[in-house]
Length: 186
Image 1 (tube, rainbow, N blue to C red):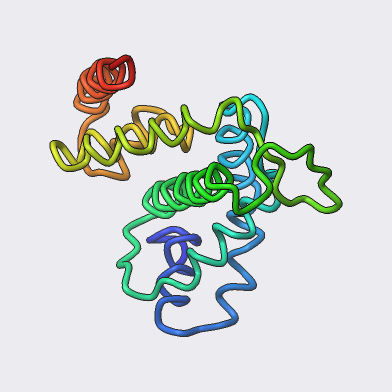
Image 2: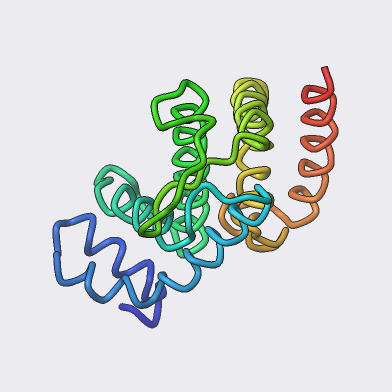
């Protein structure tokens, strides 16, 4: 079965059906790619508020806790992982901006935890809010932004995850970026 569907997809389906052994096999197959996605997300923020390892671990816990997703393939898994990482980052930023986590303090990270970044935080929260508005207008474009910008997927990978052509991804990506730019300069 793993050869036909793909090992990651097969393990995701087993995990959905409660096979705990599948999780142990899945981690080594997806960890490096999840870490790459996390590093991209954190690098794009200039001053990371989380370390890639911490972001991956939190995202992985949320991913494996979801049982109602019908995993289509490996790309689908990483697209959802990227969305979850975005939500984790935005949640931490919002909490930081409200002062719950020492906003404005000079923090030292003793483990790979939170590192406040007050200079970039409002921009990321604004981007998240704009993406939420875009999602209400065009959900596919919003997903493409998440896959391309947050997960660093190519047009082909995003197209495979969404079941559309790379050309359609390219067109929607261009339109979504223009719309987001307009929204963010308001």
